[in-house]
Image: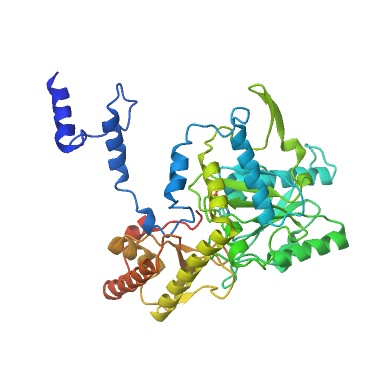
Length: 459
Ligand SMILES: *Cc1c(COP(=O)(O)O)cnc(C)c1O
């Protein structure tokens, strides 16, 4: 044993970390490896400096699952979801989830859909289907000069603009306005023409958690169909709302109960309560999926149909989604959603009682979150509060400006998740009040300091 090896062992035996006084491998591909224990400690130590998910009120994505679900995930990491021939039960479970979601969203009959990596992939696929169906509807071939367009509001997630750029579709974006953070039929109507592949409406925006006037937009599209003969499909981006509205607002029609709603995406890893890596695309009817986009292939000895952008991926999150659907059922999801909503309302009440804040749209149907902003000008802004709150107490509550033309409006947003107890809500409210107290004394933080905690709303 040379001196170096001996001292490495001494480090790990005595202090549990061979890298206590050494730089970790980070630039070149390591020439040799290390023990499994060392590797595990190295990675874990890096992550010890990560933010605490329980205090991350910025993300919509699941940060907690039941131990039984975790066990299921841990014991199913070695199966490739796409290998339908080898893993036919996994494929069957995917179909069960699709059928259950179609039922939840009031699909009129047998339909089809896809398990995706998240809503982003689901939206890319859904919007591609809109484009392909438009071309077919208009009898155009692939190199026809007609330029397709897609209509949506400034309140959508960035993925919609991404789709337009990647797949060469003109985005017709309805700007927001100060005080109006969602869109309705009057905004959409002027943008529609025979080259509109579809309209995208949001159920539960990332900015304030509200919904576009989906019923109004549907009625408009029904009228346009009868008056102008343009059959323009409506896609609902229900990334967050798809697992919230059916339980909190079951009588509010936004889904396939509306005639022009042809496809819906939802993120399993948001209010579907599964860890990241799962989303869903559900069509109203089989015919809404453009058949040209379905690949029938003979792979590993079995014919299989696929409609995905990704190929190989784990099956664990799919199994975890099915676990949640059968574990919770409608009653369980309703219970969880109602708890979140109740605690979000408690937080809103406490914020109002401080006399510093105005709550945004609390009387409307909304995701279980609190969107709020300063009511006056105390000499500091929402970015300062976000920074101070993170510095003092480690809470991650983002501040951000809204999209054009509401870009002068800065708001803060706190997601009230399943793990956020009333005790946490009370503590957060006190900590926000205290952070404001500190800022009252010391004034606005330095701009470069606060930029560190300013995270966008879109995740
Ligand atoms: C989160 C979100 C997306 C993107 O979803 P991922 O599942 O993160 O890919 C799209 N649209 C809306 C409205 C969202 O909230």
